Amino acid sequence: MQEIGTPEYYAFVRYNMGNAQNEFFKIKAFQGSGMIYVEDNHIHFVDTLHQHPHTFPLYDSTIKWEDINIVNGLLKWFSVEDQEAKYYFNIESGMFIFNLNSTKPTTRSVFERLLQYQSEIR
Image 1: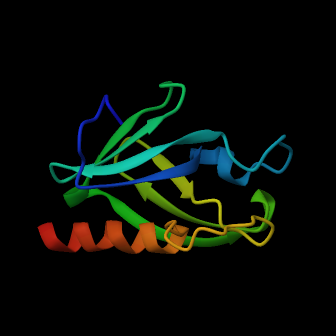
Image 2 (image 1 turned 120 degrees about the horizontal axis):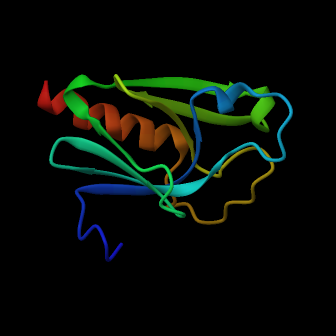
């Protein structure tokens, strides 16, 4: 958080990039963890290892609800895509995740919030 300052909105997420989302043989359902945040009309993603950061312009990106992916552990996903990349995001709140914190965002709530930001700039 110190590196990015105080963004308008942020959430901690799990992610997959591109074709990795639908690969059948893999060790875990996601490639890694990171943070997605909105600042200056862009969706920024920074992963914990700083290997796959990406910035999506809100005005020129597609935000899509992907729903449950059986290959990826029955978790719900949404994607953000621009001309350069497609990332899939999920919040740990699936069927086998014990979430006792009712204030923690869900995959759906983060998706809807990003759509809201996008609609405000169009």
